[in-house]
Image (cartoon, rainbow, N blue to C red; front, top):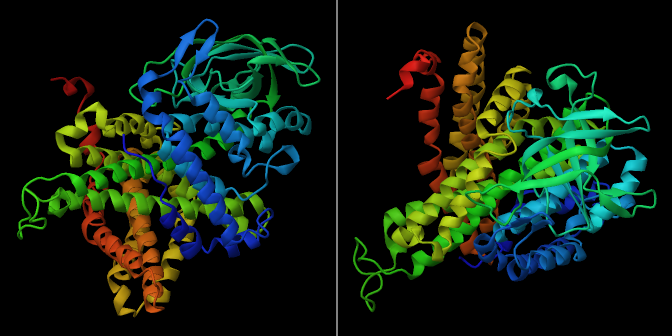
Amino acid sequence: MPAYKASIRDIQFVLHEMLEIEQHYARLPGGEGLGRETIDAMISEVARFMERVVAPLNRSGDEEGCHWSPEGVRTPAGFKEAYDQYYESGFGSIATDEAYGGQGLPPSLRTVLSEMVGAANSSFSMYPGLTAGAIAAIQDHGSEEQKQAYLPKMNEGVWSGTMCLTESHCGTDLGLLRTKAEPLGDGSYAITGEKIFISAGEHDLTENIIHLVLARLPDAPAGTKGISLFIVPKLAIDEQGNVGDNNGVQCASLEHKMGIKASATCVMAFENARGVLLGEPNKGLRAMFTMMNHARLATGMQGMALGVLSFQGALEYAKERLQMRSLTGPKAPDKPADPIIVHPDVRRMLLTQKVIAEGSRAMAGYCSMISDLALRLPETEEGKHAEAQLELLTPICKAFMTDLGSEACNLGVQVFGGHGYIREQGMEQMIRDGRVLQIYEGANGIQALDLLGRKVLADGGARLKGFIGRIEALCEEHRGDEELKEFIEPLERLHPEWVGLVSEIMERALQNPDEAGAASYDFLSYSGYVSFAYFFAWSAAVAKRKLREGSDEAAFYEAKLLTARFYVRRILPRTRALVETMRSSASDLMDLDAEHFSF
């Protein structure tokens, strides 16, 4: 297993040099006084903890997995101690409300944490990650009494949280769910039903688990309009906040999975479990989407984080592994062969991993910054604009970054060759751990439909044009700069094409709705590649300015320019094929009768 090393310098580049995060924080409630020294100290502290405490449990956790018994679920050795230290260090409460035991810092700092914990140990990251999402839902939709009852102990790490959506007969289509909620006459409800694929549904890390459960009231309308959300503790809680007996909540079994084996993925049975309504009756999806949007951005971060870890392992191996001679003559004449990093095809794979990592980090950083604005300045025009941008970019982050993260992990195995296929190297674990990211929190095909249908076509492209405004501003700022021409000119060609494709798809979809469905995945991928082109042009402009100023880190900034050049020349051309497939008719997909799919 590669030894994880936090990408501190590149994280600092995104935060300080691209996003100018200190000035951003100075305008935010909770961000006052957060200077570079404080931010960098926090990053270093998180990095040390992840490298020394969490990362060493990654391989052992995969080997041991979780264990079910009638008494409960046991997590792998070392997880409980690491989890306790995680919360004792304050990592679990960085961005939560101070009124309920949090630190009240800007949410974007949690994004930095998400990258490092996800790269150190993807399975471990699930436990605090689910709790953070549950806290956000209760914070946004709960009553003051509910916030006081649950949030302090969840922020402390004494209690954890989950979200319970999926049932065996319905995945994405939550309108089909059957879990029932019967009023008990005292303001509480009896919840009965079974949920599957529940991450962190049962474990031995905390005293209690607070489940957020989607269920139907007796008089609920059919479909998604009749879903409510309930807070259902695993153990009953008395008026003083003390836990008691089991509340009718049981883990029926653990799923036997391809990856993230140290994360307890549970089948949860609720039998007359007492719960309370969170938010309004029949408005459960709105409350649950607070968690889902948090989880979708976090899932994109997991994809990036695993790609980072795979890149680190592949790079180290490529520098050491001797195989053949360079095509242009020996590069290590004192050795029997050259290290494989001299070979063009190995460099193609490594550079592809590198641009995936750096492009994803920049996109995630930008999304975290606008998330700060949307959450902390919601009533301002700036906050509303940020919210619109976040709505557009969230499905791209979730789907594109997990698709590319999976590509990076596969390339990591390929760099190792046959050794990458062997378990002892640890490279294949990343493929297994990362494969689910394209499925859960809304499969990537669903993200594509959401992006094109709800976030672009539904508003006539207004959200998209808002983001394109940033691209146009960058192009305007650097138009005429010959040294940045190779990064700016592609953007100037692509952003009008992006808008034009929306118009083309909309016109066809008015005649046949399948046209939107047929184009949606390619449209999302195209949107991701163009977005990355913007972030690489931005990073190149920053790097070029630093070089002109005579930075003593010239090698670092030169590498930024060369990485951006590789992206523009070798990866961005993928958009040309995507344009062709988007313009292809839906009949290519729909004309073949179902019975003719047989072989």
